[in-house]
Length: 484
Ligand SMILES: *Cc1c(COP(=O)(O)O)cnc(C)c1O
Image 1 (cartoon, rainbow, N blue to C red):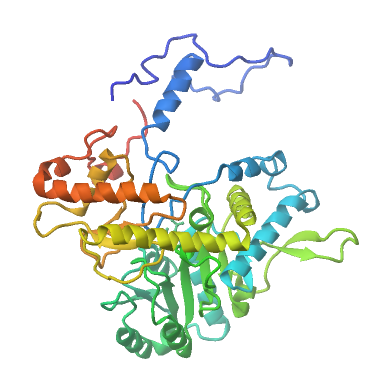
Image 2 (image 1 turned 135 degrees about the vertical axis):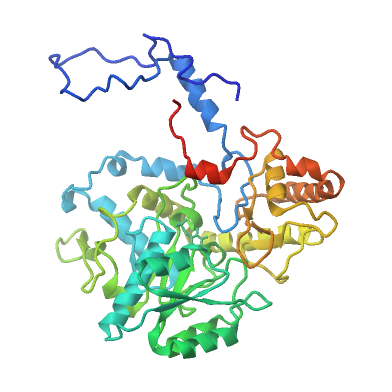
C-alpha cells in the first residue's frame, strides 16, 4: 500500500471537528482518564474522510460486487432495513427501560416471533441467540433439557452427518455430549444404513440428530421423512440447522418436515448485513413439546391489561433453560429482519426461495461441463463443484478462488464441505441478475482455461488486490491490530 497512513499525516493542532462553545463550567477530568502515552492522530476533515473511504475500499462487499460465498447467503441488504432500525424510537431505547415505555419494540419482537413461527412451522420462537452457532447451542441445550425432564438423562449422543458445518459437532461437544458422525451416500443424502445402525447402537443414548436441509452440498435430502421417523422412533429429537432456509421460504416448513428444533440465521436468510464478525441473530423455533424449555425472556401478549391496546410483556417459559444472552438479543438485527419480511410478504418470500434455487441451477448448468459436480442432481440454492482439473494437476481450488479476486468477484467457500475434494461451494443468492451470473460463469470458464495455459498466473493470484496471499496461520496466531 502506498497511500499514507493516518498516523503519518498527523500534525499537531489539526482537527476534523468543530466543537460547540463550552456552556458549562470548566472542570478537570478525573485522574487517569486521559492516557498521555496514547497519541491519537490529529488530521483535518478531508484527511479523515479520505482515510475511512480508502479503508472501506480495501475489502470486498455485497454492495461492490458478486459474493457467492456458499452457505453464507450473502444476499443484498436492502437499505430500507437500515432506515427503519435507525428510527429514534428503536435506536435510542435503553435495555433497562420500563416495559410499558417500550411497547413498540416489544410488539416488534412479538410479531417477529409470530412470523418466524409461521415461516418455520413451529409452535414457539425465542429471539435470544446472537448467531447461528449460538442458536445451535441453545437448541441442543433445549433437547438435552427435554430428555432429562422426561427421565432420560442417560441420553448423551448426537448424530451429525459428515457434510455438516463445523459448528454442529462443536456445539455438541460444548454441550458435553458425544458426536457420532454419519456418512453420506453417493447421492449426497444421509447414508440410511449407517444411520439405522447408529440409531440401533445408541438407541437409549440418543439425544437426537442435527441435520442441515438442504444440506451443505445444496441438496434436499431425499430420505428426510424416513430420517426423522427413524430418529424419533429411537426417542431422539431432530435438530434443524436452518442456515439454508433461503431455499425453503414459503415452499416447505421445517416443522412440517419433522424437525423439533431449528435455528434461523436472520443475517443470512433475512438480509441483515453480516461478515466481519456480526452482530447477527440466530433465533430458535421449537415444536409444541419444547415450547416450555425455550430460553427467556420471550415476548407474550396480554389482551386483558387494557381495553384498547394489547399489552406486550416479557416472560420466561415455565421450564426455560434460562437466559442465553444479555437483555433481549440483537434488537437492531430483529428490526432489519422484520422490515425485510413485512416488505416481501408471503408471496415475496416464496419468490426468494424460487429465484435462489433457479439462480443456483442456472449457474451450475453453465459451469458443470468444465468444473466437475460430484453429486449431479437438481440443486437447491447452492451447489458444490471441484476446483481442479485432470489436465492441470498443480492448480487447486485455492488458486481458482484467489484468481477470482483479480476479476472482481468474492471467492466461493473453499474446501467445505469436507466430503468433496477441492470443494468450491457456490451460492449466488436470488438478488443477482442473469447478467451477473453470466459474467461470473464466463470468468470461471476463463480461469479454467488459464489453469491449462498459464497456471503460474493462478498460483501467484491475486495480482491486483490490496494484499497478495497471506500466511493465514501466522495472521491468525500473531494478530497485530495496532499500527505501532
Ligand atoms: C453459517 C452457518 C452456521 C453458523 O451460523 P453463524 O450465524 O455463522 O454462527 C451453521 N451451519 C451452517 C450450515 C452455516 O452455513
